[in-house]
Each structure stands twice: as C-alpha cells, then as structure tokens.
Length: 187
Image (tube, rainbow, N blue to C red):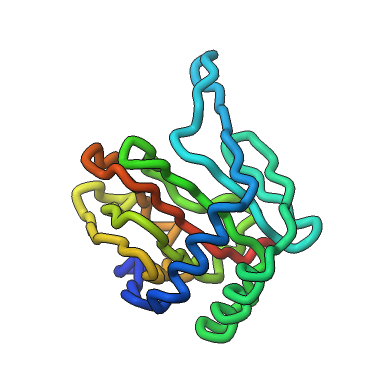
C-alpha cells in the first residue's frame, strides 16, 4: 500500500532549553569526514556523520560499514523519550552535521536492508533552518517541500522509504551549521 504522505512534522517538539542543551552536547561528538569513490574519483561527502547505536549494530550504506559509537547520556535520554512518544524501540541514530548551506544530501531513500522498513524514522533538527524535500519515486513531479526548524521532529512513517525519496538541497545563503539526528530501528 502506497504511503500518500511521506512525513509528519511536529514543530517545537524540543523546548528552546532542550534544543540548546542538545545542540551544545552534539557539538562535542566525534564527527567523521567521509569519502566515497564515484567514477574512479575519491570525493568528500558534503557533510560530517556519526553513527551511534547499540553494541554490534553496524550500519552499511554507500559501500561503507559504520561501526557504532556508544550512546552518550543525552542521546540515550532522547532515545527513551522518542521510544515512549512514538512507540518503537530505536536502536541507532545517524547524525549528520552540515557546516553551512554548501553542505547537502542528495535525493535518496533510507531503504537499506539493515533498516527495519516496518518502522518509522524519527528525525530531529538542530541549528539553522533548512529546506527539506520529498518526491515520489513513481512520479518525480509529485513533491512536498517543508522547512525544518531547530527543535522540530520529522517522522517518516513505516513504508515511506519504499515510495518516496528525500533531499536536503544546498542553500548557499545559509551560513550557520545544522545537525540532523535520524533515529532508526535496525534489524
């Protein structure tokens, strides 16, 4: 069954105080610079990443294996709140750090075999507001566009990755950083 709405957005899910505390704590995480090889050329991925998960929960995408970092207290507490509010047991979170509007994420779906596609993906935004877009895999002209503000929670429901792609496009006028934390249920 096709998922007709690829998201549910909750503005202000985190209070300003919670947002500030989480922003400061995530700055200290061991962010990693990644490189991918495309057409025989090594390219820097236009963002930094971190994979935090339960022990032995690896995440493989773009032909790279990501071993888990342990859960820092603040993200463990956030995971517990999400588990309670959404009703799923998230066991991993992929963090993306966009230094400014030059950093981006191209069109893709989070449809790797290691992700349980019968569960939602919960995405928390911190820092600079950025545009986020969805498009139907069957009809690229069918699109949704929204602004992700700091402290917001974006929920991509179960099954949405099968029918929809999403992107965080470049926004060259944005000079501030943004962090995105995407909580997942991994197999």
